Length: 578
Image 1 (cartoon, helix red, strand yellow):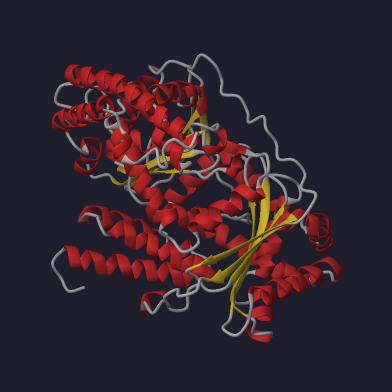
Image 2 (cartoon, helix red, strand yellow):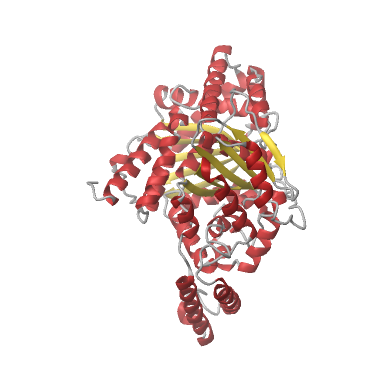
């Protein structure tokens, strides 16, 4: 069962390079190409266990955008033995559903063609459906009900929970899909069996119904947020040729059209052992873990073909792009520059540059908020993805000031970096802060597992040890060089957000002092909590509390706000006062 994972969001927001202790990892390559990373830690009663599929939205194509994320949902639906009362009957129902759905798609395509030719105004309007179309929809509803009656709902989750495991979840990104859970040390064999079973014998139950669930998730996270649709449009404008241009959740028309056959083909290629990495961090015997891996994971056959690398590269931007939007938000500006992919030699200087700019002691806050008083908040950061990257600035205008003033002030700070060397003291401070944060993140077994999988899915887990010295080697000249290399007017895309006329002011005390981006995160959490169970809230709250020590100073406000909302919701659900 797919659930909200704010802890994952925090981890991704906090990711940075730093100086820390050397991580010792034992690596095993199985006969089918699957890799197992093991980092034993004595004394921890739980094992942080996870695995990553090296596939994300960047590996999709037009027509199936959102499929990687949809898979994240489907992988919790069960197997031949988990999640159903009668697998044989379940299979028959799914086959008929595929047939009926194909006929429905043909009917809908005919309506789309009529709309395209101007014969009807809206292909989705039910009044234009033929009798056959209506009968097919009715039959699909009947089949979905029959399948639901056969299902043992959330059995995959319940098996883990009854065994004492916690925090089972997953997350999909542009470059990867990651699944994880904390299991008691004496239940390690259960984890190997459960994960191998859903990779060897997956059953994508409720596939067509789950597409509607993803639509609802898209509505909550994109359509219903103040700037969600505009941020999506901004991404599509920024990336001219790269597949990073579409959202992880997918385009609405693709979500409506993806078939189970397309999903099965996608799974066969991208979820084969030769594209997967497993990781264990905690108190366990590596020899026993290796034996269990061979027993359970090697029974999964290697894929027929290795997935190919993304071929389409981003073309060079030759002229500034600008977007103006009116939204239910405070006036703000977004400025983004094309930079470099993860691991590029310049990525380390760009990452440190972001540290120089951010936080209450950073240059942007001191200049734009305290000294000039044009902004309520401002921040910047490098995001290096597998195939490309960008550096982004955001700033919210203070009442009485405009986004253009904030934009001009941002450029002034960039100009300083281009013309004036950073002092040795200032540079060393951010290096020290970066190193301390990286060290803290290594203390958590869960965060270490997460980082090992992320690093290994890209450039190899060893870079968790080799990257920190490269950070410490960055000089003031490097900062100045990258500032002059990438921050050129023709290389930027700018988004200006004005407050829409008649927009309601936000008087929610839980949002006080947060940036608009942080307010969106809080509202997403509230949207999730509207239908959350006690157990779901407890699990998310436990994950948040576990990671409290690794949250940077500039993220503390939103972290505290979300933690308080979760605590209040838990009291409400358990019968206490809100």
